[in-house]
Amino acid sequence: MKPKFIVLLGAPGAGKGTQAEGLSKTLSIPHVASGDLFREALAEGTELGLLAKSYIEKGELVPDKVTIAMVQKRVAASDCEGGAILDGFPRTIEQAEALKRVLTEEGKSVCIVLYIKVSTETLMARLGGRWICRNCGAVYHSLFDPPKEAGKCDKCGGELYQRSDDTPEVQRKRIDVYLAQTAPLIEHYRSQGLLVEIYGDKSIEEVQPDMLKAIETSC
Ligand code: AMP
Image (cartoon, rainbow, N blue to C red):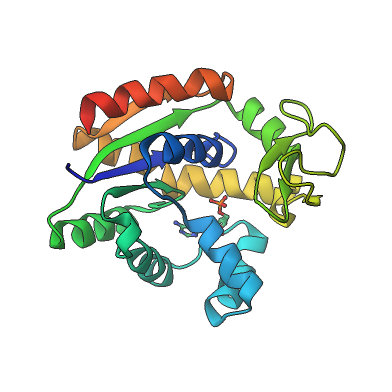
């Protein structure tokens, strides 16, 4: 079967991570999230993690060179033979071109770019209420998807925390950075005939079938 490399595009808070988790389970291909890779590197105290920290805390993008090298290594791993759901990468035109180069070298390609379109009001509300399990990474929202017991993960009982870059100031900055550096990817991929727009201002359960239908048609 042809490998499925699926790119999820959308502003911070559009639901890329949550949707990617669901798609990864349904399609049995890994969820590759560049933000998670940076946070893992940070937790391990590696040089990459320390470098990324200063950018993440300000809501800015980590430089292309290190980001591309990190993702290139991840998609070359054997579990990505059948493809991957790319969440948060590419975020610049340079990253998109690098991704194309890397996949082409292996006779692979991106089969679809799903652009999750969400209003600014929804983005701010979603990011502000986001809580994550320190143990298993499950994501909750204090308004839209609260845990049964405040501060505790329903799935594993782990402690829930808020990302330090989910504060209102950093959120604003991340949205501005998205508009300036990542939004141009919408037209970039549209002109290549790869872009499919997904209406994201609705519940997780309602968005997922729209995505699966588009993937079935294109991949
Ligand atoms: P995320 O978890 O996708 O919201 O990413 C958190 C932060 O990690 C971003 O605000 C950036 O600082 C950094 N980051 C994640 N992915 C990328 C990327 N593709 N290029 C540059 N920086 C990134």
